[in-house]
Image 1 (cartoon, rainbow, N blue to C red):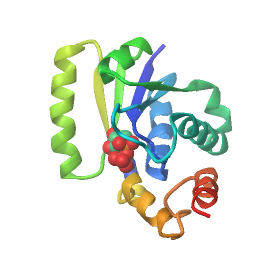
Image 2 (image 1 turned 30 degrees about the vertical axis):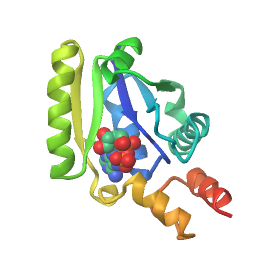
Image 3 (image 1 turned 120 degrees about the horizontal axis):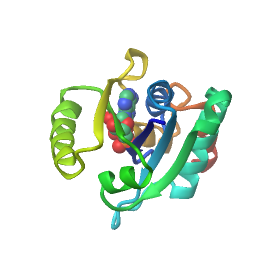
Length: 163
Ligand code: ADP
């Protein structure tokens, strides 16, 4: 059984993240989504809220595949969290050359630390390529419409949070 680990901040989950998860499910039998907790950084949404939003987004978009998805949190090395999850694939999305440069460095160093885990890059789908969680946060905080950028359940949550 192939397990893929998909790490990120997901603060909040976006349509770009959802696209990656759905495509990851085509590559692996199980997908473990890892919410990275950075000590010292205060996220907008708690890990529990992000977990609930990720689960809701998958349940809405791919009800038949939800049982193959697990959502966890981790606060150490990505490679350690991926190994704990039993993953052999580490899923990352590439939006642009900035992502590419950074991700290549990480893939190289992660590969040195955990040779049995292969990083798999997926090119961002054109329709969601421009979406970043950082800009979604800014738009939401200014009362802008977020439904273009995030799954429906997340848009509702953003709306409630910014009322
Ligand atoms: P962001 O970079 O939007 O703040 P994360 O740090 O949570 O989000 O990103 C986690 C992973 O998801 C990274 O591999 C990132 O490249 C990927 N990702 C984020 N947004 C998109 C997108 N719009 N399309 C494809 N991949 C994405």
